[in-house]
Length: 301
Image (cartoon, rainbow, N blue to C red; front, side, top):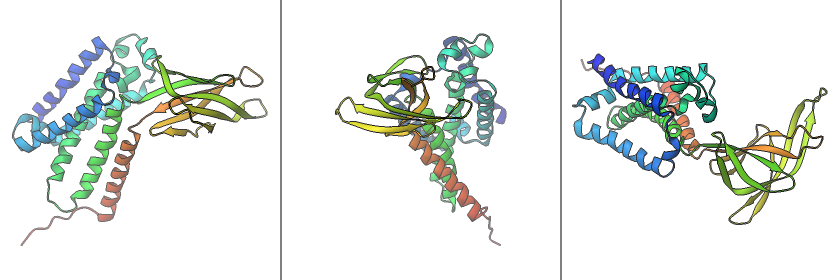
């Protein structure tokens, strides 16, 4: 039975390898909000119905909740993270220029590859199945199990489904004019719904002339309401302009004696709080297991 489960799990991985080789990376942009919400709800409901109706009697349900799936999906996930750690992860444009079999298989932008998406799909489906089954259990101290598994699932699910809505773009901001045209890491133009203009800049330097720290004063003007506000940006101190959208100061004009512009990075990640909730749930479950200790098995004499 274990060999059959491993073979079943290998089928989507092999299909992903073939699609990746011939079609390139997964088209996350196609699944932007609200389509990702709809598909996510259908996905969870499908797993629930498989467990509810079949009660672990058919092959698909057995695969979803089997210990072999736990081991194999975690093994695949570790392999995927090793690829991400061992190979330089480039932007989509730079990764497309890589030649050879590794470039074709998306190793240089692996988180967006069909292979990694299929690994996450297997792992998340498995976590969803055992979490749903855990809710139906009447065993005591099951809340620790649920917090751990539901937390890990929620953190990964938020990152997986939120990839479609995740945007990283950079924009030059000038003293003499407002600007709302940014460029994404994929090389596409991205227009903000607010204008940015540099109103002040201050830099502190080491004795050798290298910048020690720098602060930019930026005016943010909402294009819809017409309201404007003044914000102060410093390296590694982002400003959250609105829910799930942060503004970072990343660089400035180093060619002029007095900088004429600075470069800001816009990071739009509306699912990050869902991931944060998942992480908090996982930590709470781990603390509960540490405080409560292992569940003792008792038997009647």
